[in-house]
Structure formats: C-alpha cells, structure tokens
Amino acid sequence: MTILRGVRPGLAALAAMALAATAGVAACGGDGGSGDGTFTVGHSEPDHLVPGNTTSSYSFDVLSGLFENLVGLSKDGKPVNLAAESVETKDQKVWTVKIRAGQKFHNDEPVTAASFADAWSNAAYGPNAYEANDYFSQIQGYDELNPEDEKAKPETDKLSGLKVVDDTTLEVTLKEPFNQFPQLLTYPAFAPMPKAAYKDLKAYEDAPIGNGPYRISGKWERNRQVKLVPFSGYTGTRKPRNKGVTWKSYASADTIYTDLRAGRVDVQQTIPAAKVPEAKRLLGDRFLPRKTGTIDYLGFPLFDKRFASPDLRKAISMAIDRNGINKAVYNGDYLVADSLLPSIITGYRKGACAEACTFNPAEAKKLYDKAGGFEGTLELYFSNAQPTYYQWMQIVANSLKTNLGIKDVQFRQVPAADYFGLLSRREEKGPYRQNWEADYPSAQNYLQNMWGSAGNKMGWEGTPENKEFDGLIAKGNAAGDEQDALKFYNQAEDLALREMPQIPLWTWAGQGGRSDKVGDVTITPYAGGLVVHEVTVK
Image (tube, rainbow, N blue to C red; front, side, top):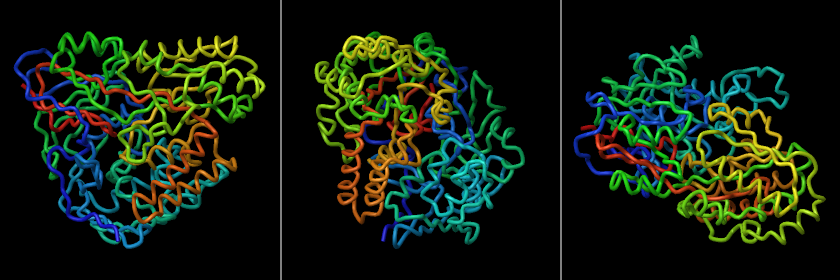
C-alpha cells in the first residue's frame, strides 16, 4: 500500500528542493519596487494562465502563487500534502484523495473535490486542445476524451476515472498502476478551478481565480506584467512573507539583467551566460548559483522523411562539440550531457550516451555518408527567450557545415510565447531546440513526457521502437519499488539513445541574481522556480 497521509510542509515546502540556492535577508537599498513590501521579477511572457493549458515555465512562475495543488514537494524532493489531507492507494491504480476542509478560491467559492475533477476533465478534453492535455493520459477515460480521429467529437467531456464521492473526497482510477501519481499531482496543470471559470474561460484567463496564497491584482497585462497580492482567505501553509510580486515580462534576458543592475527588477532567475562573469563580480553574494535539472536537447521532426535514419541523427549529435560550446557560450559552467537525464535525478547513469554524445567529426561523417546525407535546406528552430540560443545555434550550424558538409543551414527564431505552440502543432521543418525542466524529480518525468507516444514532439510515436519504449516505461510505472522501476526506466533510456530521435546537449547551471532590496530568495530546479512566498522585502 502506498500512503501519503497527514504530511504538511513548512513555509519552504512547495518545491523548495535540495540543491536550491538561498540568499540571506538583505540590507536596505535598491529601487526594484515601490517601497510598499512588494518586489518585481523579470521573466519571459507567459503563453497561458489557465493551469491545464500551458507547459511553459514562464507561466508556471505566475501559477505557482495563484494556485495550490493537492500535493507539493518537500526539500528532499518527496511529495507532501498541500490542498490534500491524504492521498492513498492499495494497488497504485485506484487512489483516494481527501481534500483539506475550509479552503476557498479567491472569489470565496469553496474548494471541493469537484473543483479538481472538473478542471482535470476540462484540460483532458481533446477539442479544447490544451497544452498539458497529455499529462492526464494516466487517468481512466482519457482515450474517450481524445479519439484518434481528431475531427470526431467525444461523446463525453468528463474523465470516467474521476469520481466525486463527496465535497472532500475524490476517487481517481488510473488506466494502469502508476507508483508516482502523488508526484504527478505536484504539476501545475493539476490545480483546481472554480465553477465561475467555465462561464467564460477567455475572461478567466485574463484574471485567473485560484486557491493559492496570492490573488491577481487587476488583470493580466499581456506583454507587460502580472501583479499578485496576498489572498487574505488563504488557509494553507505557504503564507506570504511579502506584500506582493509583479511578474514583469521582457523580450530579452539581457534587458532583465540591465534592469536588475539598475534596481528596476529585484529577481532574475536566469542571467544570460555572457553576463555571468560580470554578475558574479558586481552582485557578490546577491549572485545566486544553483544546480538544475534543466537539459537542452536538439529534437528531430521524424514526420519529415529526411530525418528518418538513426545514423543521420547520431551523425549530427557526434558533429556537435558540446564542450566547445559550453566554454564559448556558457563559460564552462554548464554540464555536458552524457545521458538523457540530469545528474540530480535518481536513475542518472554517467556515460549512458557513450560515443553518440561524444564529439567525433570523422566518425560523424562516416555515419552521415552511410545514412545517405541530407538534401535541401536544414532549418534550425529556437526561441528568442535567451540570447545564448542564437549563439550556440550558430556554432551548431558551422559544425554541421564543416564536419558533415551540409551547405544550406538557416535559422528560424520564434518569439518565446509562440514557440511551444509551434512545436505542439508540429510546424517545425528541421531540428529544434527543446528543453526539459523537471516537473517533479523522477526519471519517468523526463523519459515518458519527452519520448513517450503521448507527449513527444518529434513524431516518434507509432514506430516499433517507440511502442517498445512505452512498454518499458509502463513496466517501470507499475513496479513495486524504486529500484525495480529504475531498471525499466534505464532500459527505455538505452532504447531512446540507440534511436536518437532527440539528442541531449547540456544541463544548465542555474545562475540568478537579486537586488539588495530582497532576501530569502530561493530558486528551485522544478516547476515554479522561485519560491515567491518566502521572499522578504526591505
């Protein structure tokens, strides 16, 4: 029996993980806010603010304060109850969730079991085309809401695996046993929504009504900012230690850094790599280094037959000098990838990628020729969220020209707010930058969501290899303990590395900074990043 009962975190609990960076209480000074106990964080524009309709970390920044999930993460990465009183199972397939009484949404509507069930069904309903739709694929009834014929309207809009027993009890039946269901519940898409949301979802996104420690002040000012202030009716354990936060949208991380130096921004979670040496010198103890679980990958659009050969994909991988890019672009601070998993995740195996991730131009050219080469324009896709993306894509382009003889390489730079949608619609026509920031600390979270048939953006699903991959993941999900699960997850990783539909590049080094106006700044390696409620303001 797996039981998660009666565990409640302290102030640091929501995603305040081991390996987080924490800064002490700051001295007075700085102009990052209005002096009213609020502070400002610079980040890229969110794509959506309905919890089930985004997989963007920029949206999670805002959602983590507006909403409270059933389960959060403790400092050691274990699931702990937030909105839930208990999460129990006898067989890892049928789960009973007891919801903590007395919780309210920001409009004073009570938080009930139906608040979660309705929100999850809304996100899982295929015709809604929500970005996080496939995160609900574990729940019974998901297939009925997502028929293979995308033009066919489902006969129901409710997940059959969700049973509202009473106001404080939700029974969840999964399609298969899944031992990491409590960790899945920490993902922002599993937040509840009030009944008022469904009257006009477009209007709701402009001013989301959540159940978290902060409520929105006014409306989402698109491409400008989102202001959050403490919610007086909040009854949970993440009570704010400040008077509010403004999430200010920027098109460039360089501009955020300029404003951080000038005191117009109080926190930047990711300082551009080119600015890091200067930031270390100027910020001193206000520079916030941390380990992360964020990996950059280069994905291939396998729905384009030009990329069908695993040998071609491996050739491209071996033609890229990861160490050279790390030194030239990231000051040698990043960790060159040798696995599909980052080193902070249990199940990581040093050197799992072996020669396929090792720079070897001569062998790369042999594999390239064996695969028959590449015809036409090779288009490289990436967003404008960080200037380093363009920098390393330039080096990749030169490497492919020099080492493989690909003559025509073009860049396709896309606005950050549009990039994930483009990939989801599979509109890319060439290799694309993809990254993964852990939703929760699990090998399954990386492998199933990035390579599994339900969530991958490469078009790998339907192949015999991908079906075998899905089977191994399923065995890991149903395993009785972590070691058995990891055995199957690692086998799945080996299979994906042989096929290389997506190649790992490097794991980020977390490099943030704060103004001297704020203290107790913790940035985690998981969804939500900054632990907003703990920040203190001078």
